[in-house]
Image (cartoon, rainbow, N blue to C red; front, side, top):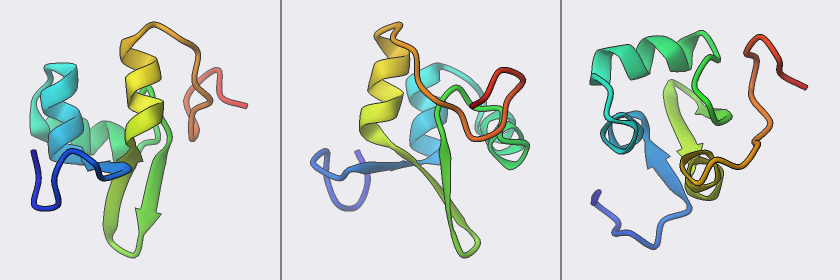
Length: 72
């Protein structure tokens, strides 16, 4: 699944896009606007999403967002 294997605690935006079934370009645009359904961590220019948070989203559980309409 990425260069460090499935045990990583974060996912790239490309991996998030695949998990959500959306286009990579759309995922990057949503991440830049803090509109992904899970919080985006910014590490310099790199953006990643916590694997556990995304798994909760996919399971239908509520997750705090970085900055969407109903965040915080």
